[in-house]
Length: 170
Image (cartoon, helix red, strand yellow):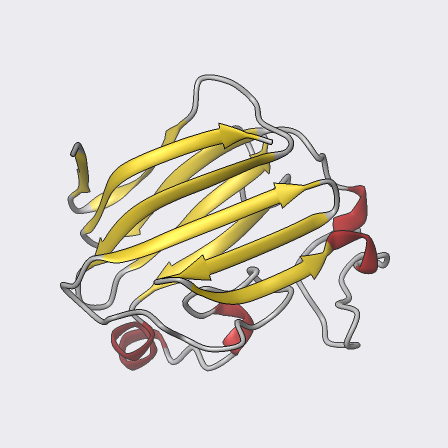
């Protein structure tokens, strides 16, 4: 098994090609306070605003240092769009399995075998607003974002590990 370790600093590891309908599975491990994510269907020159992200984060450690309480920004969230139904992450320093499936507008996420996100992005039809009426940061309605793009593993300043990364076209 190949392990990617991000040390301090920030950055991404990108796929060489674009994906539309796909499934990615991997294992990840977070350090204390880690903030990371899996970006997908995005433009690598503007990943935060031109595509999608599933957040990977040490909720407890990051909340202590940054005060983030919005569940739409915590571990396993469909970032800024929907909070995960639960947090089956094993905790800091433990390996977790992650599976993301994208088919058309449907996006599903499972951590450690528990499905925590199941959304249809066509329901995000208004810029800056989630279907439940809460605000998000997106200047474009999520339904209008590309359905094809790169996949990237993010490091946002703390140590994070990835291994056993497999991408399969659907």
